[in-house]
Image 1: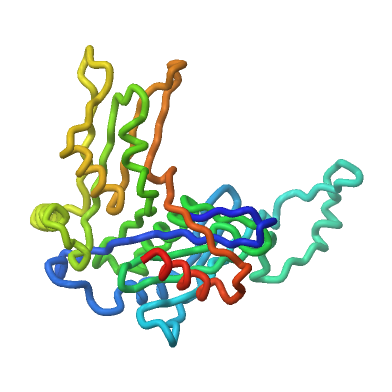
Image 2 (image 1 turned 30 degrees about the vertical axis):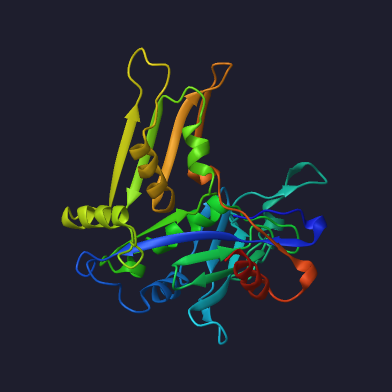
Length: 296
C-alpha cells in the first residue's frame, strides 16, 4: 500500500488482511498456526499476477525477537515462450531457426527477476509488503492482493476444508471518498465472513453469526438510485455497512462526473499507504516495526 520515489531512498509497504473460515470450527478460534501453515503450503506454488509477470512467495520465517511476526520474500519474474520465434533486432527480422535452436536457457531460470520483502503479523492476520524496492522496482497493492488471493485459493493449500479471502486494506478516507462520488447512482457492498477472533464489535459479530448460520462466506448488497432521484443518499446504516466491508470485503461506487463521464471508485483503488525511510538503515523488517510502533 505504499509507493515512494526511489530517488528519495525510501522503500514501501502494503497491508493485506485475509480471513479464513472453516464451516466445522468457525464458531471457535481458528486452529493455532493455520495462517502460517497455509502460507508455507502456498509457497510451493506460483501465480500469474499481471500480463506475462508471475510471482511466488518464499516460506515465512519466524522472527526470533518478535513473537507472532514472520518474514519472507516475494519473487517476481517474466515468463517467455522459449519455443516461440526469436527476433534479430539488428536485422529487424526473424532469427534463423538454426540459431535460436542453439539458445539454451537452464531449467528454472527466469528473466526480469525482481524481489520484494514481506512481513506477516499472525495476530492481526496482516501481510505488509514492499510497494517499491531499493532498486525502484514496483509491486502494486492490487497486484499483491491478487498474488496472495490466488496462492491461498489453491486446493492443495486449503484442502477444501476452509475458505480464505484476501482484502486490501484501504485508506481511512476510502469509504467517504466513495460515498462522495459525484451523482452516485449505484453502490455495491460486499462483506465477507469476518474472523471470529477479530469480531469485537457487536455489528461485526452479528454479521459473522448470520453468515455462519446461513453457511455463507459473504453477502453482497447493491443500492441503486430510484428513477427521478438525482443520486443515492447513503444513510448512516449504509455507511456503517460500507465501513464493515472496507476491512472485510470491498465497496464500489458508480456515478458521473460534471462532464457526464462514468466514474467508478473502489476501496481497492484507495489502498492504505505509509512510507518507510531507508535513511535510518536496518532491514525492511526493522524499519517496518519502527513505523508500526510510531502509528500506535
